[in-house]
Amino acid sequence: MMADVLQTIHDQVREARTMIAVDPDVGLKLLRMAESTAGSLPSALVGDDATFRAVLDVRNELGCCVLAAERLEEAGVDTHVVVEILERGAATADRILDRLTIALQRC
Image (tube, rainbow, N blue to C red; front, side):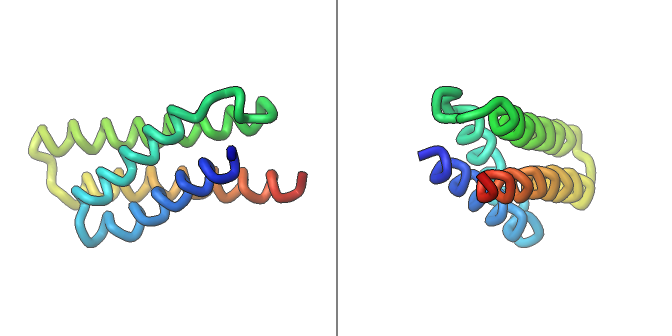
């Protein structure tokens, strides 16, 4: 069950990374979905503290980049700046999820 949820989050982040350059609004929505999915993962499904912290790191990274992008967009900042924020947050979340996936496969 947990592996399925993690895969869903990872898929959402990867799809967002692809979409951000094409349609930043769609990329933003996908990152918001991934953040929500990571935030709704019940701690009972996570077998150890390190995994739980990694999922929280993903949620926090996505939450921060989504919030920053939304506020910058509202303030009228140039779109390329907003896109860069989204790309950076998605890339960081993707790296965290990659490391988590490798660690879980070793167990």
